Amino acid sequence: MKKILNFINFGFIKRFFVVLILFSFFVFISALSYVNAVSEDISNSVFRLHVIANSDSDEDQELKYQVRDEVLEYMNEISSDCSSKEEVVNLVYEYQDEFKQIAEQVIKDNGYDYTVNIRIGNFDFPTKDYGDISLPAGNYDALRIEIGEAAGQNWWCVMFPPLCFVDVTSGIVPDESKEVIKENLNEEEYDLVSNKESSDIKFKFSLIEFFKGISFAKTSN
Image (cartoon, rainbow, N blue to C red; front, side):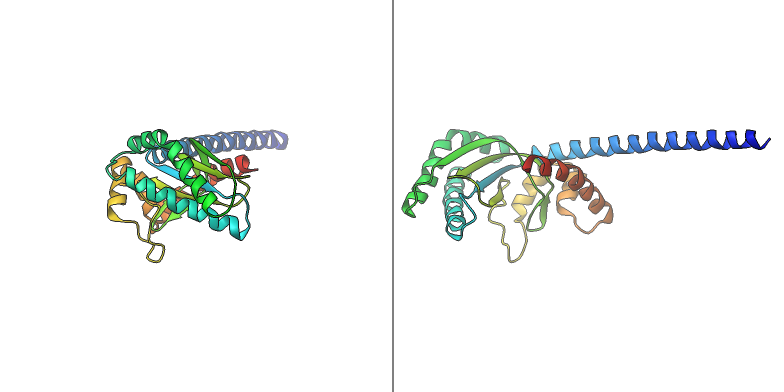
């Protein structure tokens, strides 16, 4: 009788762990599907700028910021009437030679002879805060400007909606920029990038950071 009971208990425990493993697998797949869907929607709504310095020396880092400022000033001039990401992307493709020339001129004016490589594509980005808007790690379309060896620290911002000039002292994104983001995301997705008070939203954002952060770490190594 005791052997029978032990056999039954063993069978129950075995089934329990099988169910637990299957349930865990289901939760993992569901979470991953959610993260991929949300990340794709957010990614499809923005276009980013990525400037990489030649090195981490103070001089090269300062040069990076000067290149950034001139590129952003020019971008603001030509994109002031743009109302969609597609329009901005098309402009960047159309004027990529001008962006390169601007960067090269800044470099030359500062007494350097670094080369400039312009790339437009889909790149991995870490989680980044822009004032009171947070974008989770993931793949984003971007204009990448590589200066010289491109071995220095990066600088990121969002060209559309225009978040590059967020007032860092107040940490507040302009309402017009928020409206553009809101128009391109559903309510939950907008809450994910803008609502830092809800514990439920914080958990979901952390979930995205976990999955996409792993992906970013792998591609950065």
